Amino acid sequence: MLRRILQTISLIRRQPRLLSFREAGHEEEAGSVCPDLLRHQFLVSEQRFRALLESLPKVAVQGYDRNRRVIYWNKASTRLYGYTPEEAQGRLLEELIIPAPMREGVIQAHRDWIEQGNEIPSDEIELRHRSGELVPVFSHHVMLNEYTDEPLMFCVDVDLSDQKRAHRELDFANRYDRLTHLLNRHSLEEQLNLALLECRRQSGSLVLVHLDVDHFIDINEALGYDQGDLLLVELATRLNRDRRATDIASRVSGDEFIIAFSGIHDLDDIPRLVRKVEDVMRAPFVLQERYCKLSACLGIAIFPDNGETASELIRNADVAKNRAKLAGQGQVVYFNQQLHDDLLHQHRLSDRLERAVEAGELVLHYQPQVSAISGRIEHLEALLRWIPAEGPPVSPAEFIPLAERSELIHRIGDWVLENACRQRAEWRTAGLKLGRIDINFSGRQVKRTGVFDHFEACVERHGLGPRDIGIELTENVLIEADDDILAGLRRLHHRGFRIAIDDFGTGYSSLSYLKHFPVTALKIDRTFVRDAPNQPGDRAIMEATVFIGHRLGLEVVAEGVENREQLALVREMRCDLVQGFYFFRPMAAADIERLLADMVGGSRDFSS
Image 1: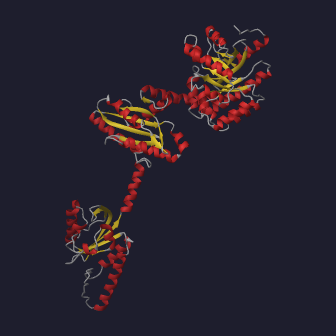
Image 2: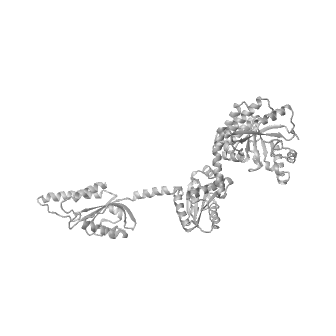
Image 3: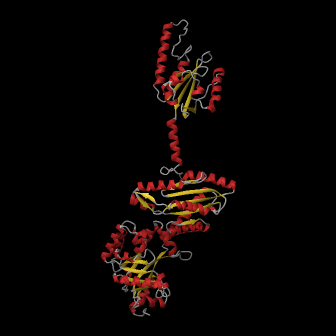
């Protein structure tokens, strides 16, 4: 449409005489041309031009005489600038719509066009509305009747408000988080690098806090994502409250935020600023008209000690945050080089572990569970070991938690189950006298869909039954189990499989849970066995555990028995089974085979 206007104006510029849009009209000499015909053509042209100009709601057209006074003002100009044609008629261009800083330049540009023929170029500019607001437009100018005594300038202004608004919205979307309106990750790095430049200039420090809400996924699952979003918005509002102009706040992912405090010259201020972030979580949040108390883990990185750039500081604060989450809810961890070295070591170890599964470097060792009274080997616990082709063995305490933090735990768990079942079947075929082999399941393993179906299928595939293979779970796994997991465990329990609570006493330690969960045995943690001979409190806990376990019909196993004094104690408490170095360390399958063969031959006595 703008092109049609410009084409029409260009045609009018080629008229041989003056064209005026004054309401009174204007007659022209036409030489040898019939005056009535010329007048008729002129009126038709003017009517068409007026109709075109008035039909464009977002294209404002104004006409000005040589003194820049309004001679034409269409309806779109009224909508764009707020003046009616009557109010605009005869007034100066610069008084109506030209912002004060532009006025002298506009007057001079108009004068140069009239006097020297220097056209005003088209451009995107901001003109003034009647209210004083600035209006973005694309402005094009046409001069009619140049080099005459009555030149006319027409301004064709296209309203760019919608485009500018869309551009601002796009810019906002690119720079800010849609939900909380805090900076997004990309803008955070930009702002943080600028803040670091200022810190260097002033020889100051900066502290960056990475906040991660504890168990946020539980809120989404229990109350719904809408309530989770409301919580995040409220948290962002709190983080923004009392924020200095130099402070930076950003939402970097679902329930993770970063807050940066710059311009720090006294390092003693850092703990106070960290506490300021902690205080954000202290007041309860209101969700569905109920008060909800939450906590968050914080990872802290400080410039310049923990990084010179934004990306380094963010990465190191994230490392500290992850370590805080491993330590428990509401923990605060400051980054140090040891954390970085540990992370690098774990990353490399994770790569090695994945290759170790393929290379056959994982093996099963077995530790006997011995009758506390007779000393006879009753059952075995399968324990995973990593013996690399090169270098020393890697401790299970190091590589198993690493596997549990990734999907690798499922591959390893399947391997353990398959090999333990295969080994049990081989020993039965060999005629070795043995009860069960118990296998440990981690919390991540039991959460995998169909894990117990897979367990039963593997046991049956090797021709085994509930008397041959059992499972061990920590009490925390049971406490956190959902209905599907508990239903699977109840099915195993009903079929006669042994289900033991491992390391009992180190988790929630509520004996009342025992009547609700499908368990058949308790394994008292080694720390109680170790300290019970000299610590009355540990001894009392052991005695209570054995008493209640037996009253509930559960088998009780004492772990970590290493000397005669401990053995005498667990016998006195009437523990059913003993497991520990006093009798046997974990052994390779071949050693277990020889041990069991000796038992068949009657050449070994472990009762003393």
